[in-house]
Length: 351
Ligand code: NDP
Ligand code: ZN
Image 1 (tube, protein in one colour):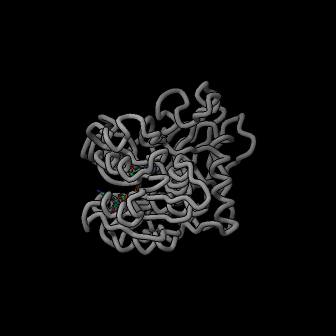
Image 2 (cartoon, rainbow, N blue to C red):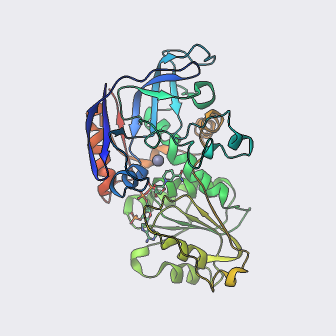
């Protein structure tokens, strides 16, 4: 079968591989729609995970089940499914500790395009199908459904980690697809003021649509100063990081009130992270710094499906570019790399 792969750090291309085989609890899925992720860009062009050779890229897909293992009970060939980017090993001690994302090791719930071939292939393998797949309802389009697999779950996780209380002030640094879903999540979780930081016009418009009350353009001067001015020197109760380089954590800590929460879902591609000593109260400000890989699995996807089905959130606004034909995966990934002004997220429908 054909797949679009990371050949090595900085290099991509089409390769041929054997079709994957399903173990007793697994499924083989044919993609119906896929999307590239900014994480694919960190992985390929920054080598953020280290060297990977001939690894098929992609972890955002909806598809059709083509084969299931002998022990799979709830799915059968022909079912249309939402496939989460994170597919944990549910029989693991980390899951029992409450951290499905790190089942069998740090970040090891993230398998596609990390520990095994991803979804930019004619077929891909899903471990523990009963626990990791969710049925796609007919009323949700492929374009919207593919946004649940990573963008919505990740942005919402940013809002979950942020400990948002009714009426509290939230800053969201970054309003790409992930940050936009963090804004939507903050609104759903009851935030009062939501200050969104970004610059691309398409993202700014979408941030307002999803619930931002104020927009800060980081290209118009120091973002900490702008946020402090907006909040009359107080800062925010919660600061969600969904964009920026490794020095963004410094800004986030500075923007948080004493006792505030910094919630990171950014994937830092290089460098070390620093904490500003004084604004962290010389270590005593009770500013809580948290960061997490998004949750995956079946229940998470079923809950996100309900949020869309019952009109709580519309992920359709994230999709600015739709391609038809599997070969366009390459073009979509290049767009994700270049991030033109009108782009939020491209989707490839595999006709
Ligand atoms: P995008 O590149 O689309 O968005 C990044 C956002 O950050 C943009 O709004 C950009 O502004 C803004 N930005 C860039 N530099 C700065 C700066 N210095 N100050 C403030 N804002 C800035 O990324 P995505 O939304 O696709 O992804 C966001 C991050 O989430 C990535 O690192 C990605 O790898 C990660 N991720 C993490 C996951 C997890 O499980 N934790 C899962 C999926 C993704 P502009 O408008 O100018 O572009
Ligand atoms: Zn991703």
